[in-house]
Length: 567
Image (tube, rainbow, N blue to C red; front, side, top):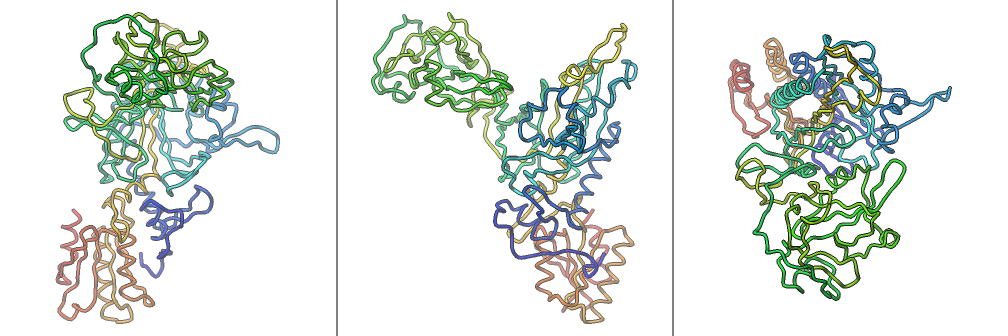
């Protein structure tokens, strides 16, 4: 391809709302342009990159034995009613009616569609397992689309779904998809981490995220310094932080004037905050109702809201208002596990299960209880805490620390959530109808375009990995009006093509050399060959975009040198 024949509208100006490097450089480099809130067009260079990522994903999925199909982007609302997600997904699910009044959605994911495809078409365990995937447009009506391709409303995703006759076979396929995803990200040249994750609205009993490591990532992940353990903080675990238990004492009600916080109470009673419990009061929202819930965690811990939301199977948790507290007969700042109103739902963090001498609120203004024995109470215990840096890894003696990541893939063990809801069954070896056991596997293909740049850029622009670069070599003719320079440029360009190296020839006659170099650095081709002043000595210059190192090479040797560098 020649620059003079290609539509590459580079610009010096970045969008005013562009805070991420990928958003700025993909727009400035002419890869994408915005057409609406969270909606982007892929320009020619962007389409090349997108197709390269898509091809790698497809090749590895095919190698793993998955079957590619293409499901419709518009799906009947009726299918979402069957699964229950027509209301569970909330306003992110864009619904509309056609001229006949029939309800449809723009699919954000395709569990319902694929179950409907398999239902009544696979009827026997003998036809299982099967893994079906497609790479197609998705739409989520994000409340705050931002960060360019990172959090858009319309995006390209690879979503795959497997069907099994046993949980053991699901686990086998889940592990195969984990290996397959690792190959994909390795081929893309990305530094990534596989982490345990919360299943969110997709559901299921187990899931893992693939995080591209980048300081700009929206997700915080906890990683171990001694083993491969990693987890999104929404799902991260630790070895219990245990101190020596105190000797059980009799419960005593103590006047604690103006002491509402853990620090205030601990200081007033001269007690280590570890031996106290704090109440976090939330309003849990369900599909058709809401209720006030009290979560209790150790005084030295913080509540992790996603864990808390899952613990009560709510759609969302909101901070309880003073009106909520009043209607529930709760005393803010003095809430405790004893003598709470009977209709209040209570969940206690698992690490408090064996504690027998702690301080908590007395459910009375300006009073706390000491000597509370949690082992004598009937309570619901769940993992509720936010793992902190410095906590012990749950799998070894290492320490956990935080890093940032971009979620670029997510795999789930769905189980029978969708097949049961939609009455999709097969006959097992005993001739008995059983719901399909399912897995789900997603990769954000368009998001990966941005993720590559978040991990690979400098102040000048993009630095594409070799497998994602729109062209491997930019052959820059310093002054295309000079016939000798243009002739050498075309000779090198054609030799590169003959050696199956993707190259673009910057033959623009109306652009100065400095502008051409600026475009090379902004767009981020891995290498440039500059034909200019040293031509009289039979030399050209190779520029490495990543390091910006320049090397003089004889004209007749430049292609061989590039082949060595690329391989």
